[in-house]
Image 1 (cartoon, rainbow, N blue to C red):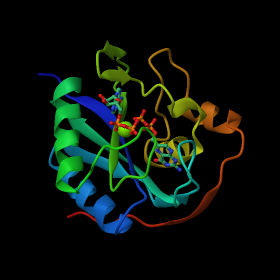
Image 2 (spheres, rainbow, N blue to C red):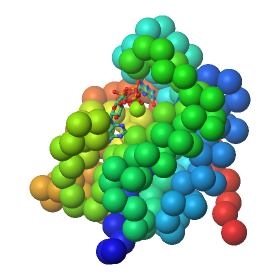
Image 3 (cartoon, helix red, strand yellow):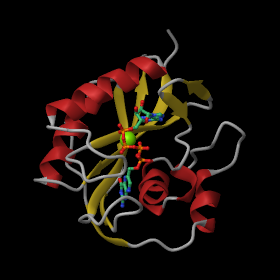
Length: 165
Ligand code: A4P
Ligand code: MG
């Protein structure tokens, strides 16, 4: 099986946000070879009901898992961090999204890659560009050019990620 470079978006705005993110990063590191992790960004919530600020980050891995297998593993990690699905875009202990999977386009029931809303979201693009500066969409669009075009959404502050052995 050929390995693919995938970007995973992490978000948390319930409970001990930092420990959910750190636990998720260690689990994601076991799904392949960890290439890079962004800083941890504190961001204002976008969409959904009134809710508290998020911590967001992006992890980049080289993985042998097929896209749907990767998503299944990420769902399992969400559950381990106490994720309950109540309402769409509502507050959550941990949300893990497959942002990019190589240059592949995936259009399956329950899995769309690139993530359909990533192109307008600073809370995704800023950590993605930090962790994977030359990332591209399947059509060759540089992710950095999307970040330049995004209208302002607050990224409040950021702190370094944990270090991995
Ligand atoms: N799904 C389809 N494609 C994907 C993909 N590439 N990665 C399906 C992950 N999941 C994918 O997701 C809903 C459905 O999307 C799943 O059934 C999955 O099969 P979910 O995690 O159950 O629910 P959700 O996260 O509430 O919905 P959604 O549509 O994924 O929300 P988003 O777009 O992820 O937005 N503001 C800030 N500042 N930071 C955030 O992280 N996140 C959201 C959630 C809203 N506002 C935010 C943030
Ligand atoms: Mg989600």
